[in-house]
Length: 427
Image 1 (cartoon, rainbow, N blue to C red):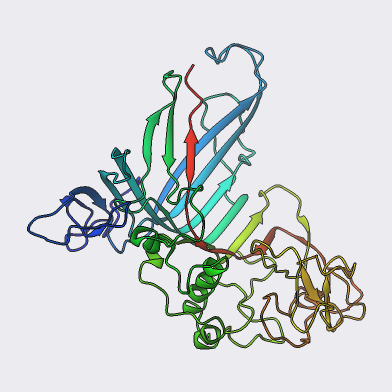
Image 2: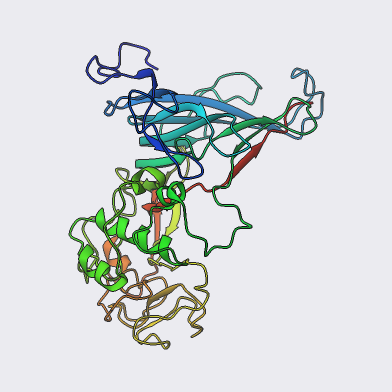
């Protein structure tokens, strides 16, 4: 991990990596509570727990992909193909991650089980441009990569829960052909043949963690409660009053993950902080290298011609193929992005509220709301061209730049209900 020293506080004595046998309380697949009596536990697990806090450290690796080889793949010295060499650099940490081994409790499938809750944070970079001083396409020969080029992700934070203790597991198994390949599966928690109206047992209540009664929209509503609960300046109570929700269940932050790329995102609708009428100062500059997702050219490459597009948003709930926008089906000042007047198009923007003279798709960069139940008013928006050195409204928002920052991205309420991986590499 390091070529010149130690990583300070990687695993200090008062916050170390812990490897132990343990009997924590939990819930079986059928909803039965486990390990309620500490002196007489029902189940014992084996766990490996990371420190709760760590400094960032650097991981890096390089790879090769060759396609279309003209020779035998078992002899790399014979034949040629098209090759791509790449490097991946991660500077961050995995504090809070946990790996557990236990016996699965699904009736008839009480097998060896795994569980991994991954916490990752830091900066990531993937690049392929080689330093022009010594490039090479020889298989197996390490090269020096360009010091800047690549796809960069700054201020990343991700939590992905794969399995839940006792009642949801990662299971290893062989394939039916017994040819050396294997499967890695998270079985479905709820049998698809069981009617959706059947009440959830304790295990499934823990897993789904609804803040309202079970319904078609319960997952969406709970995810929005979680979003507002973690948004500074929000009015969570206003949203809860409309949907009739309780506070977020304690189990939600264990069973639901997230993936956040960059440290800012727009919040729209009831309960959100007041929407600004001008570009917020926290929005990434078009060539920002300190936050979000950005592409960077190689040292000897020409600048990148880039566009500054407007912000868009959409409601992607099941059954929302028709967008009923605030204020009625005609949407008032808000029209579909394509300008077709079709309320089935769920991508909306402020159509006439831009300060630019023409109000085209490329110049209306901010404003409006994208939540089904949100109240709204037309907002005065800013022509992005004025923010990047083009003060005239008629100038196209095209930038020649060495860095293209495409903004931040967040996915909240991630939940793995079913997953199956099958290897195909053997023979």
